[in-house]
Image 1 (cartoon, rainbow, N blue to C red):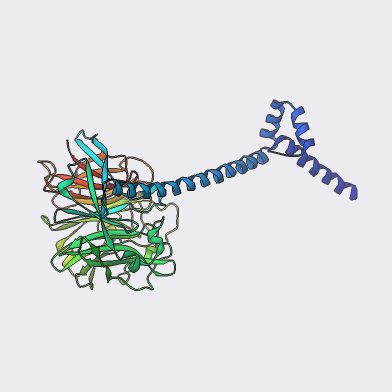
Image 2: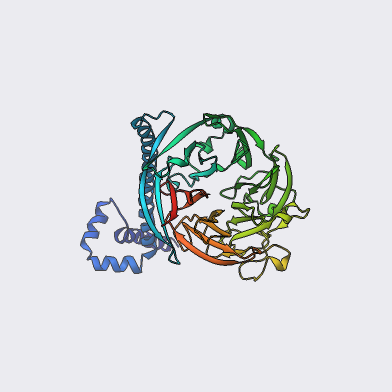
Length: 484
């Protein structure tokens, strides 16, 4: 028995020695001497066919070391980008002696863009003082709102600017800094540093400016809230305007925020909330997750208009047809454009868009027990009592916003642009989708794709100038799009 144990021990020692000879790195002189004596073809054969598991482990070890080194280098470059961004902003203000703002130079001039259907556009870009999305842990670059010939902008990390539309034909664009009390009222340091926690929307009505944001109502637990200030270009003093039960918060909210505010009538506006990745609550009428809310200008919730919404980040009220058109992120595929009419909004009945029970996407990376119907099930909304989307997209295009662009070209009527994001490039991503709907807003009758090659976080249409103004996240930049 003793000899058997010694024999097994000897085999193990021999295997360890041979493994050291044929696989990986060693500082042992004897091992390295034997390595030199063995011909390379023999070493490669034994390594690949006998000690292949050890070889794979050795490769993984080396790759992990390389990844660690590269991650350190990437983090260093990110820090350098932040520093250079701050230096650039300072130099631009000093160069033009602009203490209340800075001159944003044009960084791209009249780039010609041909859409999939051959329509021609031109686009110029101006420097935008936000961190690039890809180096900022996916924090949104910023949002736009047009009011009284000025365009107001807020970055994801709560810096505020405005510029005058009279100046957008110039080579440089003056971005005026607006001082605020945002650091005092928001308090959450995560808003002001890299990461997804951020401002999520801007809206102006009757000389008041509203911001939606991810609100840390408990430690590491978030929902969506709105703050408001009297509009003042010199200083904005925000106060709390709308929030909901602090017990209804998510520790895994990610990007499922919603946050779009849309003017509706003289007394109220509409506000979208994401599901916060608390999926079942999108179907709970007593929950604020995954809803379209109607909020009065006194800050009171008037009603829940719709439920069953995953993450509606874009919406517009098209007053001509009295319909709200919304763009929504799906799970894996299943992005949707939905419509809800004025009559549906003011009715006593809640409209149900189906999530998470029904989707035209796929549930791939997580388990959602409430999900019953996916892309393989045709008409899975209407067959189960839910409202069908106008159109859905698989693969995903990652929609960020949707706006009406009537008169952008002379034949544009009931025409909309939907902007898209995309962690990676792909068909329909990082683009504008030109869409026209039928009279009942039940199907698309015209579709074109204007590929920009950049994530489009937000956009506005200035009808008087026939220009679309966008925030692009990879540059980042303010872009001016017009017909060529």
